[in-house]
Length: 70
Image (cartoon, rainbow, N blue to C red; front, side, top):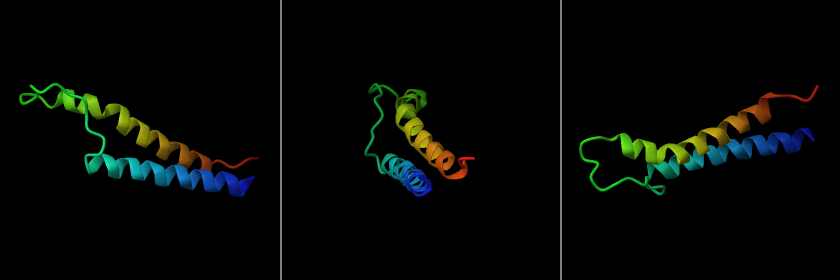
């Protein structure tokens, strides 16, 4: 059970990093209107779901690795 938990934790951490790398390469383009030259806020709000997903995957992985069954 412990090895499966560690494997799942490391897998979540790797997937979290992979999502962040894909976002940085522009694979996940934000959904924003064409007239966003004045403000970057709509672009940032468009990226919020994908960034949150990557952070959540990373956090779940850290939780799986650090918490031990007592």
